[in-house]
Length: 255
Image 1 (spheres, rainbow, N blue to C red):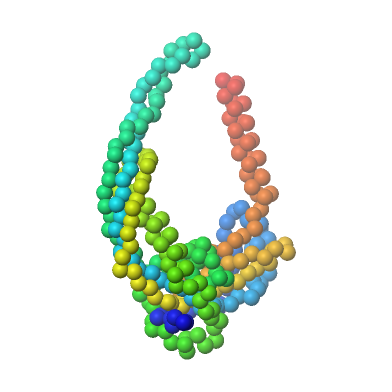
Image 2 (image 1 turned 45 degrees about the horizontal axis):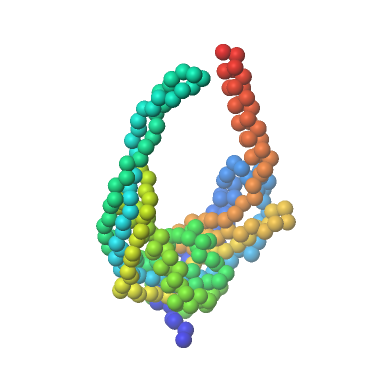
């Protein structure tokens, strides 16, 4: 059974705006070849409505672990037959535990097989409050995908995202300068989902016979993609750093 979309965010970034954003983005970064600034026109820029699942859930977690606080002590060691005071860092451990309740709202999971979740996360967020009721007429003139990832499979991805965020929040509650043995037991309830359609510009460009891909959030204009690296520039920087280190060493040896 096909799940009908609950909502859609229309394209707010036009084709010309997407091209301008790409032109500005491709010129940024010192470690990229200069020729990128004179790049040939981008190929196959197209706006696509991508299917997403969004998941909501209440999560209750019980956590425990040890928080370590650093402190320092002076220790006398022998260097070249002479006593020398050395500052040594040590750790004082404290056992802590607690509970954490959190509501996860609109965890986005890409339901497209062509646009993987790690790529999508680089151009988040979308402004979910601008979702409108789905109207197929909004798709006219645009490409649109039908979801390929099923609802249950998408929830597994959402659970992984929730668990990762819960671990970070529990770690913040545990505190300390360092931590060990953090364990978390969580339970999810009041689960719900929506099927939404979101706008994304997808394109690729050719540089020295190699294809590079980039994506643009069709609502906010946030862009992510890959660029070629100039190994000549990186090598020059390494040589410069080595030269500076050599000069400093020579100056110290003369003192």
